[in-house]
Image 1 (cartoon, rainbow, N blue to C red):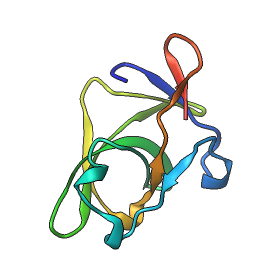
Image 2 (image 1 turned 30 degrees about the vertical axis):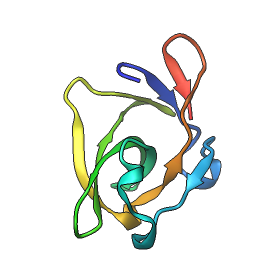
Image 3 (image 1 turned 45 degrees about the vertical axis):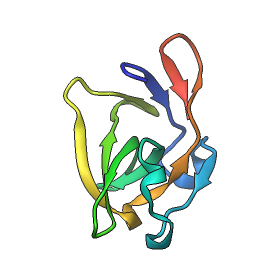
Image 4 (image 1 turned 180 degrees about the vertical axis):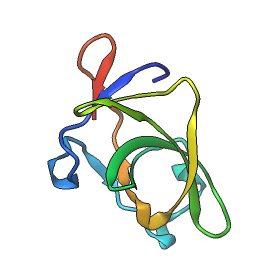
Length: 106
């Protein structure tokens, strides 16, 4: 998905056009979720990202997309990587579906 855009409907989870694969809890964290797509809650907004790592305190390192406009996200040239508490991971999501050659919908 390098360079790909994603389309997300609204900012409320109920209105996102995503297939929720799994909600995460401390009990469900394991190395199998590394590389999986997720929705992260950050500063009042929801952002798609990919899980890179999990530490011993059950916080997750996630590379997130940036918002480019209403309901549009892209992978920034400089990676946006932060550690998040499991409570800030809304859910794992399915792979995006291509809408055109560049944007994808999640």
